[in-house]
Structures are given as C-alpha cells and as structure tokens.
Amino acid sequence: MDSLRIHDIRIVDGDLVLRPMTEDDWPLVEAWNADPEILYFVEGDDVAPRPTDEVRAIYRHVSRTALMFIIEVGGRGAGECWLPDMNLPRLLERLPGQDVRRIDLMIGDRSQWNRGYGTRAIRLLTRLGFEQGADAIFGCDIADYNPRSQAAFENAGYSVYEVRVAPGPKGRRRSYDVIAWRA
Ligand SMILES: CC(C)(COP(=O)(O)OP(=O)(O)OC[C@H]1O[C@@H](n2cnc3c(N)ncnc32)[C@H](O)[C@@H]1OP(=O)(O)O)[C@@H](O)C(=O)NCCC(=O)NCCS
Image: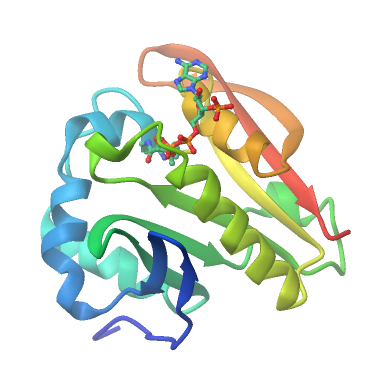
C-alpha cells in the first residue's frame, strides 16, 4: 500500500471541520502517535511509540476500508477520526448480515480535550455512517480508565454493549464496547 486512500467528504459544524486525511498530514499524525499520554489512552500502559514507517503503513492499510478524517478546530489540525468497517470477529459474528462499522478517534492536541469536540466529531461520523447504510456503529475497547472517551460516546447517543475483562500490560483490566443503532 503506497499511499492513503483519499475520499472527498468534508463536514463542517461551526468551528469544527472533518476533512479528508492526506499524505500531507503525516507530521501531525506522527506527533500524536508519539505522545505517551495519547498512547496510554488509545493503546494502554507501557506502549512505546511505533516507528513512523509503521504508523504510515497502518494508516494506509486501514484507509482501504475506512473514511479517515483530520479534525480541525478553528482551521488547525486538532485530531483525527476514522469510520472503518468493523474488523473485530468477536463483534461481527454476533451481528450476522448487518452493516457494522466502528469509530476510532483521538483529539491529538491535548489543549482541546474536554471542550466537546470529541462528542461532536463522534456525532458527525455517526450520522455519516448511518447515512451510508450502517445498521450499527461501535466504539471499541474503551479502557476503564478512560471515562472521557466513554462519556463522549455516551453524549453522542452510544450505550454499553459489552464490558470485557482482558489481560493488560499491568494485569487484568476492563474495557467497554459501546454501540449506536440506526434509528
Ligand atoms: C476521548 C476523546 C476523543 C474525547 O474527546 P473530548 O473532546 O476530550 O471529549 P468531550 O469534551 O466531547 O467529552 C468529554 C466528556 O468526558 C467527561 N469527563 C472528562 N474527564 C472525565 C473523568 N475523569 N471522569 C468522568 N468524566 C469525564 C467530560 O465531563 C465530558 O462529558 P460531559 O460533556 O457530559 O460533561 C479525547 O479526549 C481524546 O482524544 N483522548 C485521547 C485519545 C483517546 O482516548 N481516544 C479514544 C480511545 S477509545
């Protein structure tokens, strides 16, 4: 996979804009992926930042089945969000024949946390997913120590689908899958 698959969807909601992620965005994306505090919430404790070529390879691969956006606040890149097809067999096998997707996001600029932008980005992507035919959309593997993420999904209309207990880097920990159904 040589480059990101680019789409042409741009969503404007006041000072918040979701615009297509492009190959020009690597400096932003790589900085966020190297921030230990972001990694802690996205991946867990003690996770070393991935080398930049690995980050690019993952994003390019995910873009095959995902709409990938940069979240802009006031015209500046503040984060990213993805709307991929569901890729987790444990969830897919329980919703056979349904169009199931997921949302992944990070507000990479930590000075913008807790200002409602995550909630709004989830709302916008959820609306887009349902407009495109999704039956259900998940937020996946939200760590129990990440109530900010849980609250943002709940604010956007999601509810808990399953609580799992799985081995983590520092013992067993709980994580949440949350779901929104098409109305
Ligand atoms: C998770 C994330 C996307 C949320 O976006 P955000 O813009 O910061 O969140 P919002 O401001 O929209 O909403 C945050 C909510 O969490 C609540 N909150 C924040 N800290 C909290 C805490 N310690 N306990 C409980 N609730 C908390 C806020 O009060 C707010 O809820 P409210 O609007 O009902 O008051 C963003 O913080 C982020 O990118 N974090 C790092 C990466 C990450 O965790 N990604 C998701 C992985 S599953």
